[in-house]
Image (cartoon, rainbow, N blue to C red; front, side, top):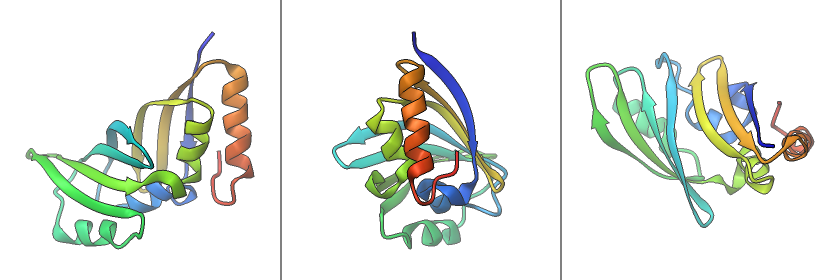
Length: 138
């Protein structure tokens, strides 16, 4: 039986959280993850106006290939992040144990993830994988 779980992770405990750590944004919401080989391209909403400083900050990370604006509304902006997820231990643990990210919302304080695993054992193995990683706190 599949298991759906929610976890909260500090922004500085995983690479994507560090990349998208925005002091001025009230919230960031992951829209979709599209795996393509070693590259993961997430679409995400930023719930504040996005300035050039945001793009400069995100693109300074060596694992980020690009960040592009997809759509803009009064209260939010949809962005695409092309990055190499292989350096993010959280995402690697989720992938290694066939987890699926159903949703994720981030704020300066941390990220809330909703994930699905095939069974409790797969979730437990993912949790152990994260705990064994040098920077991921679950």
